[in-house]
Length: 308
Ligand SMILES: NC(=O)c1ccc[n+]([C@@H]2O[C@H](COP(=O)([O-])OP(=O)(O)OC[C@H]3O[C@@H](n4cnc5c(N)ncnc54)[C@H](OP(=O)(O)O)[C@@H]3O)[C@@H](O)[C@H]2O)c1
Image (cartoon, rainbow, N blue to C red):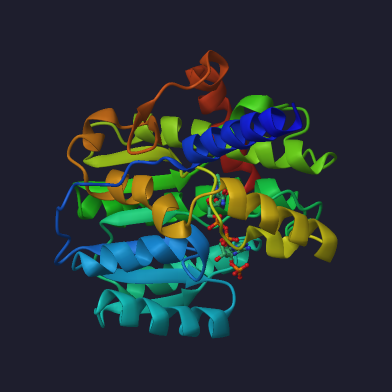
């Protein structure tokens, strides 16, 4: 009896494990020679793997990072792995709106093109505040990227057809936005879910704002990925999460596949404003497709970041 039980649980475990790890690769081989890609937080995890994959396709890749030492090390690594020398970094702290404005000014002065903007950087559930007094998750994951994208939009339009990708998470579905308290910062996981729901609404409204202007936008869930985000947690929780990630999550290279797909695929370009999982369009929960809420969040964000 004990033997049967062991065999049954091992088999069940094996199939759950296999199913969770099954993911599609981006099979589109489009090259990006002559194009410029900007990736926020490209010094680690999914962002770094995306940078390697797009540099290998011939793109000029700029990673925007808050820590210059980590960024310089990542650039060396990306160059080595992609066999491309056309990779550089610039300083950007999304938790500080002045830094976002300075970054955009420098970027627009030094870079002639911007073909693909990848809003990748993200904070997990950290109960902290940005320099401007926003909850860390909402400030970095949504507001920083909102301001960044808006300030770079003229260049994206000049370089049309161009794309904006925003990394979200399937956990968007566990929360709704509270417009009385957009800065919600109580339960860590819910704070994260709200910021990722904001990413979904942002991408949809951006598609509406840029319709007919040659800029297409995508919200991407990369799957559950063995990246560096556990560094924000306590030692014990980190150890526990490392074990869970090793068992159930996919490697970063796999996590970058849907991002790469949305960056290059002609098929994806037909679904501007869409939500993508596993290299194909996916359906959002009805409440997350509410264009009225998306517009309201856009207007609220404009006021919060003081966008003229
Ligand atoms: N991993 C998953 O399972 C998963 C699932 C769904 C969605 N996602 C999303 O995927 C994206 C990438 O995450 P990841 O898993 O690759 O995590 P990661 O390895 O921790 O990468 C996050 C990146 O964001 C950067 N970052 C954080 N705060 C920043 C700030 N204030 N200014 C500039 N850069 C900042 C980090 O820089 P530092 O190195 O300096 O901290 C790091 O480079 C995130 O948006 C995340 O929400 C991940």
